[in-house]
Every structure is written in structure tokens, then in C-alpha cells.
Amino acid sequence: MRVPFIKMHGLGNDFVMLDARAEPLPPISHSVAAALADRQTGIGCDQVILLQPSDIADFAMRIFNADGGEVEACGNASRAVALLHGTKAEVETSGGIITIEPVGHGARIDMGVPKFEWDSIPLAYAMDTLDMPVAWEWLVQPASVNVGNPHVVFFVEDCDTVPLDRLGPLIETDPLFPAGINVNVATVESTESIRLRVWERGAGLTRACGTGACATAIAAMRRGLVGRETRITLPGGMLTIEWNDAGRIIMTGPASESFRGSFDWGDYA
Ligand SMILES: N[C@@H](CCC[C@H](N)C(=O)O)C(=O)O
Image (cartoon, rainbow, N blue to C red; front, side, top):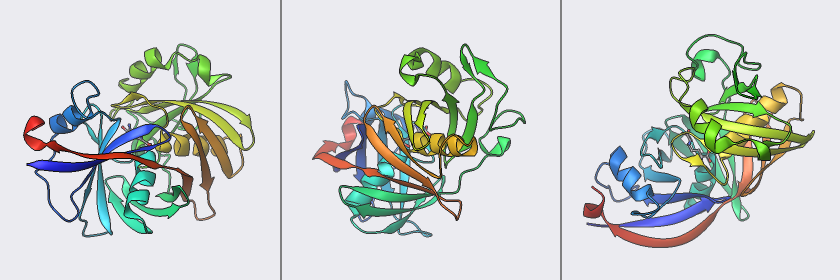
């Protein structure tokens, strides 16, 4: 069986998109997703995105990390899906319903309401999630935010000097985070600008992470470091994040299609 795919990216965070909204596909196991994502032997991407029909929204988006694990949210893929869909829509994810809206060469996404309670991050035990009394070497006192998926955010003097390839996997798999964690290191440049690098759970270092940008902006806003709207600059480019009066996170930024192709399902199943 030949299956069409669309290769897309948001700020260099890249996706293999499978559209099963009209024609169903065989179930995607974690090993199929990991094989598709493999950059040596598969198509290669940070996340595999599967679009499906939904009973509660216009359609559903399922997200698989490069290691095959299924997760709740992906900000950059949400903008790519908006571009593909072409009109405003409500999208079911396992992290909640988001609203996507194409604008210009990208999209505006209502990512929903952030959560801060220790057990909704989730953490292994109770603590203040805005000023956590924990440290990994010189990464100290982070904040945690769940924006559909779990994030920990460290504010540092210069995020470019943090050895994220070494500390990222240590923190991602620390027992403090029973569901794993996306690791953000951020430098506040001004009250409306933050520089950010992200070690993604299940995918490693990526060019950009949309939910990481949301979580970092919200943590910085809660700490009074930036105003209610801020720019976040990642290695792959820039996003704007607003925390609006209704308490919802609004992410705006670009996305693009790279190419279309097809693969033989039997090669991956
Ligand atoms: N690249 C994404 C986040 C993808 C999921 C994440 N790695 C997780 O495990 O939660 C984004 O743009 O948000």
C-alpha cells in the first residue's frame, strides 16, 4: 500500500504529515513512527503528525516524537497543519482542543490555557512550580509549565553556552518528571524579547519548539521578566507569544511545506 506524505516545517522543526481525514490508514505503532522519523533509514523528521477525523472538533492531530512516543502537543506542527488545512479550525489533540488560523505565510494558534499545579506538569512530588528548589549542575531554580505538554524552563545569562546535548537528556529522564520533560534554556534580552534553545523530550535538540516558546514566555511573564506579549528567538527563527486577557496562549509564526512524496507502508510496518 502506497501512502502519500507531506514534509513540512515550522522554523526548521520538521514533520512528516500523514493525512487520514478522508481515507483511513492502518494504525500507526510507535515503531512505525520511529522508522518514518529515522533520518538515516526513513524519511526523517523531528515529529510524525497524523491527521484523523474527530467527534469533538473539526479534525484530530496525533503527534509522535522521533523516538516513536506519542505526545500531547506540538506548537510548530500546529502552524504547519493550519497552512495545510487553509482555514480556521478547531483541532483535537490529546493535550486539549486548539484553534488554528492561517495568517500570511504562517499561522496564529490558540494553544489553550497553561497549567501550573505540580501534579498537572506532572512532577513526582509537590513543590512551587514557579521557583523550583532543584538544580542540575549550574542550571538552577527552573519553572515548570504544562502547555498541553510538559516543560521545564531555566533562565540563564547566555543560553548559547549551556551544554544542552549533555544536560538535556539527564533532565528529560530525571525521576522528578514521571512523564519526561521538554527542557528549555532561555535568556531574557529585554521586556519583550527572549532567546531560547530547547532539548525536546523524545526528539533531542531541535531548531525550534513552539510549545517550548509558549512555556518559556508564560514562565517569564509569571516571573515579571517580560510583558504579556513577547518575541521568542530560537535557532530556527522567531515566534510571537501572547498571554491574553482570557488566560489563553496565542502563538503566531511561520510554517512551510518542503515537498510531497509517498512511501510503501510495508517498508515501515
Ligand atoms: N516540536 C514541538 C514539540 C513536540 C513534542 C515534544 N517533543 C514533547 O515530547 O512534548 C513543538 O513545536 O511544540
